[in-house]
Length: 412
Picture 1 (cartoon, rainbow, N blue to C red):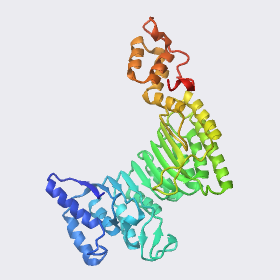
Picture 2 (cartoon, one colour):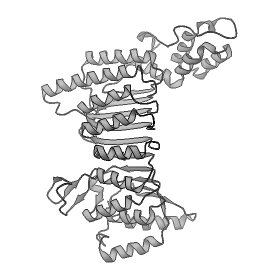
Picture 3 (cartoon, rainbow, N blue to C red):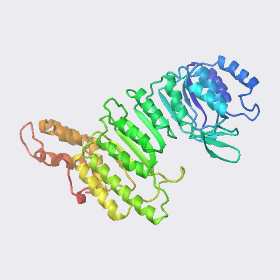
Picture 4 (cartoon, helix red, strand yellow):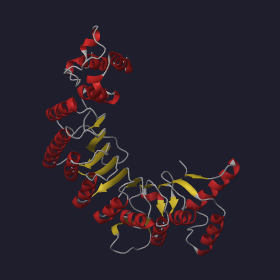
């Protein structure tokens, strides 16, 4: 995949030429070396003077020179609305001076709305200050850059709609960012949440009435995940999607495995209980993170009796919860859970809440709404058995309108 960018230009041939010039600045070049060199930097500046400002820049699938990216953002980023950074640390090349230049460039993105930085670090052949040095290797060191990036965004004054960071900022930086963007931030992705303080900041923010987050996707260790799911009981009515991936530790150790299974069981039961009162969340995902990005999710870590207990808890919850339409756990959910989720996705809440005042014609319309779904037809007729007979124009909803159904009936 190549670098993707958007700018104003009506001529196709000219657009391709401009794109190629941007790409040559952004990509590493074996011929010219690092653009941080004085002569090369001058050449880049001359080229940029003749290029239009960018609205969108996607670098997720390509290798990028940090110095080139910084210069592009400094010159062409004033109107930039969306920036998707490199997806891998190895695809972001530069030294510490390039990193500082990049932070300066981010501080000059006043109109950025959607910002995603997938690289958790960058590689450099220079020595760095000990306060930012995490893991040395033979010819490079690794720098955690999330906090510097968050601080740069704060200084830009941008009001973000979405933010994705694949390393975690400090709790104080995250708190400042959430306060700044509390009325605009709708989507948040935070990977590698590593402290109780950071989890506490996010949990508290989700309970605020002025929080406008609609979707949250986080990755953290299992003990912090168990703590975070309690947020579901207190979060406001705007959060509709929540995804939690958690690290389980060494599952080859019997004691660790047993402890992890107990924590997972209690966590899932707590979620089921919280969703009895949380009637706003539409999609919930919570499962162990594979040890490597390229690996598929492994088989369930839970035994059959535990899975059955968790399933029963969610079925009980979904008997009353008419909002949840997607549930993803460590194991494949049962047909009974799918039954409720499917009904919720096509309007079970609408029928339950409005059925008492619906006319016969409205009930017939509901039957036709999903006429090919046996489950939906069963639910509507169960809600109002009088539809099978003649009667008054207005028909009161049956007391069984929750759609509760025996497990054996689901597949019929």
